[in-house]
Length: 266
Image (cartoon, rainbow, N blue to C red):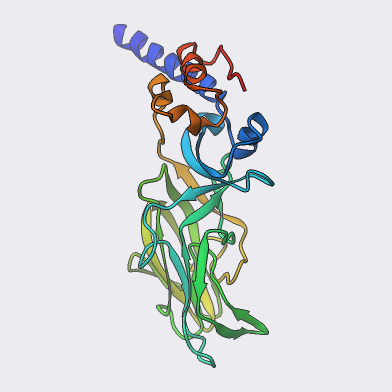
């Protein structure tokens, strides 16, 4: 009986904390509304009680949320389109340092390249040249392994939890070396993985695969693993600024100490 009551008390405490954690800003627009002078930068938000860090971009215009990728450059967090076989040759590679996320749905906008750089040029699929690649996509027109990509969410509060699909003409590809062939899909449930994709022409990705340039939109589903642990100590040493809604350290400490009953002063 004691164990049952202990479990119930723990569940109730967790529920109460989640309720008052929702009083923190759920998105960057709320931070901007509370503090119109808030600059672009890193903030802690808590949509639905899922507390995590985001980079708030364009705070003076249309605030948007981005996840900063801890590992970027080289073989981390890039998408590439292999050679088409015509002229000019050269893979198209897009490297990502941040990816845009909808904080409520946890969908990633794979086509947002605000924090990405692209190299290479391919002409063409139909009349469309390839100059960049959406996140988490690999494609090619000359074989299943010419297109390649890497997703690495290590160090963030998330993992990918989505189905990857082949698309195109005679498509094929792989996820961490395990091959898929025409008509196959594969559910991915991990933080970091590599993919290949191609065909004549084809690709692998979450939308389904084969997207190019800035096609795709909010198409990659993430799952929350557990993010920033916050309490009144999080307010110290300037930490109160990371929440974006407190006037000063005392305002922040008071809010946590009263479990949200003392609202931010901003």
